[in-house]
View 1 (cartoon, rainbow, N blue to C red):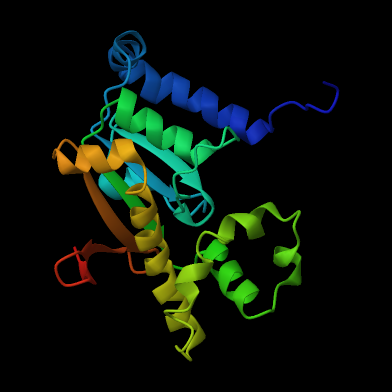
View 2: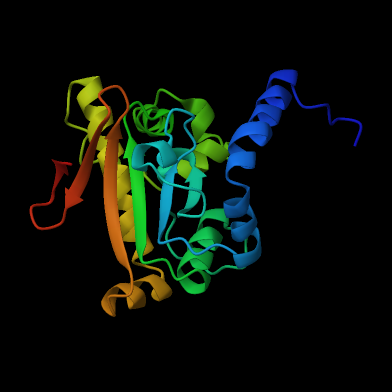
Length: 216
């Protein structure tokens, strides 16, 4: 593996600082996590975007959340076709093995994946239309939701609307998984949809009764 290179020095220094401070001060807790395993209450599916910091938003400790990140926080529909399905595997593990009580989909403002979907739907991103585009084929999950926001003229408002729709698309697809729909029906699992405004630090929750997002 001659393509591998040493870790950048700034990351080495940050690790050493963490080991000498946070780890030393909480060593007993880390050893407990290592020996007792993980028992998270919730799974959070969020975007890969480096600006979305789930544990900071909720002030979570290690071991509290089972976190899965992907482009535009999307969940594909249930497709047991024997192929590779990273997101579906994470969801299956969280629900059937870890027995999480809550499954949260967290969208956010300024999502590049969602903007890519808009550009693709408008014919402005031929590279995403290409069969060999992993991002493009992943964003196909969201394409059906574009019709509902296509008439919005303001580009920013259209993007924010589709970001919120991406969360709903994931929630709808989650319910196509038998082990999730069964868990929801027997009330051992609840699903939640959130949208985070990065610049304003705001958080909105989808209200199924009104069909709208409400500020938290």
